[in-house]
Amino acid sequence: MADRTANISKTIVALAGLLFLALCWHAYRNVGGSGFDNVLAEPWGLVALADVMLGGICMGAVIFAHEKQKRVALMWSVPIFVLGHVVSVAWVLVRFLPQKGK
Image (cartoon, rainbow, N blue to C red; front, side):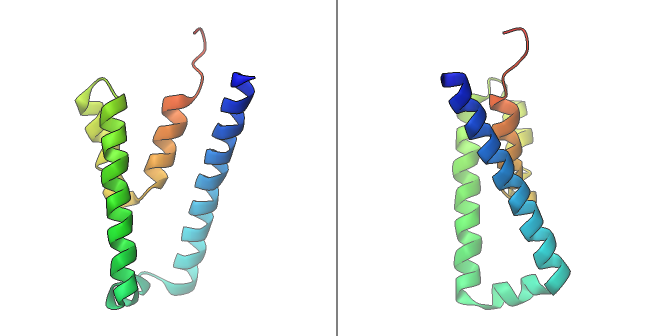
């Protein structure tokens, strides 16, 4: 039963990651690169950016708590601040995928 729950959770995380990528593609296609300037010009845009950064800090702390090698944790954590939480989704999938032979 635990295996089934883990597989369902991984599927949900993977689908959420794909949905996020699709939404990013759609937004960029409709607005282009200059749209980010418009977001930062609005107070709620700054709040949203701060929210994403806070999430990056929290996710970085989770990654550092779970990874044994701090270098690996750093290599996963830093890209979150450039590429966003799609990196967090990738880490969750890689970290918690069942490994063959175990």
